[in-house]
Length: 135
View (cartoon, rainbow, N blue to C red):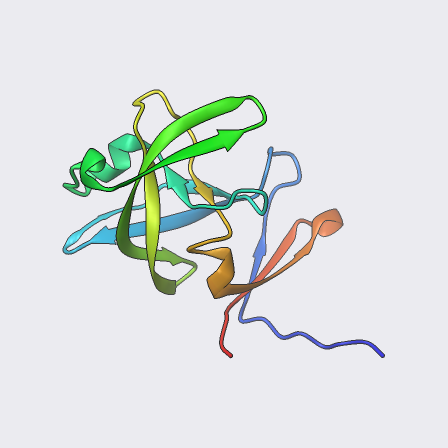
């Protein structure tokens, strides 16, 4: 027996770009930044470039330290609780900012974003389906 899913948002993305890029909004009080971010189901955490945290008037290294390990090495990040919004779906999440100013990637990972949304993909058509996750 099949299961039916319903989504609030349908987003068409380019099949010619590497990864699925969406516009994220990070807010800290009255300050906000709106970087492009990749949806990364293989990333445990939401990680952003250092300068974005600094643009939110955050002392990046005052956050919760965490060492991120990858297949090619590891790097240091610092966690801060902020408002994170994608396609109008707003959550309060701990996001991490890279220690290095040379880290040049923004990813939406499992903890802090994917665990708060309902996500569907039709890769062959470049379609992303999204809704806020509600029990």
